[in-house]
Figure (cartoon, helix red, strand yellow):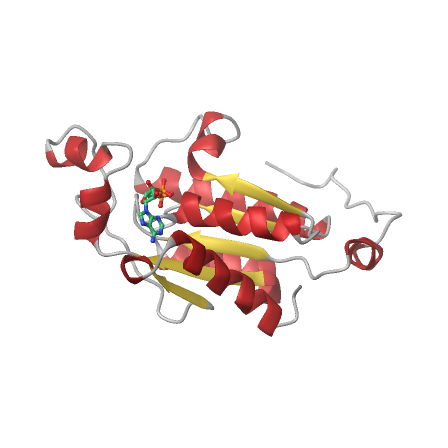
Length: 197
Ligand code: ADP
């Protein structure tokens, strides 16, 4: 498809004006980890803390996005890639608007996260929700591991589809050794240390 007739319009309210108004840096908190690792739970706890502190935030959650924006996508490799591409684009719009946006998706492939990082640049904060498969499987909050082990869910990350762990995430949460509260505190402390908030 040709893009010859599409022109990028300059916004009359600039990005810097928006950032000045909200009083903190906009970033993407990109949570990645196995299903049941705690991405949603921790992202929500962080979101609540930041909100209470007066930050402007938004949360893009895996399941919710798949009900709407990405409801046409499945879980095969190509669709997972497209899933992450769209999420990155949307997250970047929120960053442009000046928000701290959390994204809670398994995002199992390094290449996709690298692409998101490239697009977001220094605004990208990778949060590795590092929970051993055995612990996730024991928690099994949505009963998905049971189904995956029974062969009822194809391409299930950790069982029948790979999870490529981040090598140098900005924040590394070992959730088997800490509470949700401690994990959320670690994320907020990172943002404070880097003077993002
Ligand atoms: P994901 O979004 O990664 O699929 P969820 O947040 O939906 O994972 O589920 C994680 C489950 O593990 C929740 O039921 C949560 O209460 C539980 N849990 C127990 N301990 C922790 C912890 N330390 N950190 C995060 N979640 C935990």
